[in-house]
Image 1: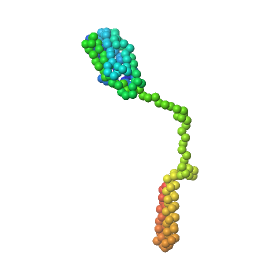
Image 2: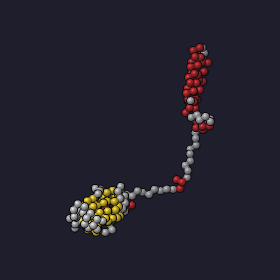
Image 3: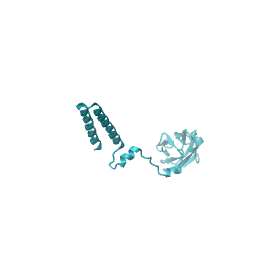
Image 4: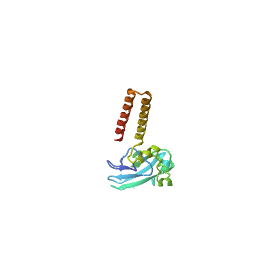
Length: 192
């Protein structure tokens, strides 16, 4: 958001006005910069619309010397509004024969942020879970998910062993061997 609007006075011809912006959007006070090109000029300024109730000009008439510039502070009370306010800044010269109107939108000032003492205190870290403590307590850095997979593999081997003992025979023993080898291969791949 710009904090100033520039108006060129007498740039192309006598009693001419040109604005460097088509629309101004602010959150507070802003500057009106009157830049004279060539001859001196009397410039009249006024605020219209809802802008008039929250903004003010120090004066309404200004004299700008030849090839000089004059900065006018337009005070805006953005704290007094809770939604955008629109209006126009009108600049006139040549006793009103030449004028420009610049649309101005004033947005509410950002609200205050409440800061309490709790922001100065370091944040506490949550207690690690059982699997996290076991995984990091082993010294080799096994992750909790790996421990879970190992536990499931041991359960599968135990079920295969009980099945082989109950059924008996070479086919059941071959099944136990396949489950055991699969578990060992998975274990090697996980620990790598």
